[in-house]
Length: 227
Image (cartoon, rainbow, N blue to C red; front, side, top):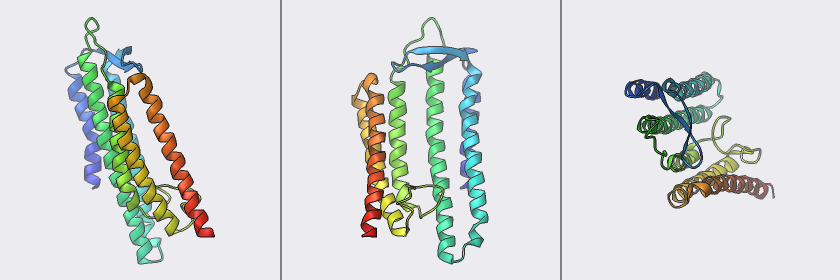
């Protein structure tokens, strides 16, 4: 799995380097909420996105490295297996994020190339829509992975109530995973039917609402256990 992670970390840099050979030195680099170009700059700024991904991957690898070092310190085989499982979950999440980031980079490169001629540049149609759809799909994938994690300090629905014991953790993350999947699907649907002007408000509202629902549920699970 480590080889897959590092391969996916390097791929955006390679794709960007190849794509830049087919672009002029100055390209559109930013779009407003209406999808209109509002900043031009050097095509080499596109290397910033692959660089950010590499920083993220290095951080995740450092975290899992130290988690692996702690496996043998766990007092029971079950706790050792739990830590191994959580490391695997972190790596899967890393791979999912890398794929999401690669798709986003490819989209940005494509829109820059398509609109590179300043005299004939067109609005980058639905760039916001694309990003929200991708985020929705990412939430669905993460929501599916979440229930597989065991209580840990790295990933999952981590509140004071959900981390009370294994039962509160399991119930909170199972419910949280379902909420994230429903939220992701709702974001995709909203992105397909709403206009750009209302899309960001609707999807931010979905994220805030799902966060509140998950938080309230974790408290209720804890409170019911305390009765």
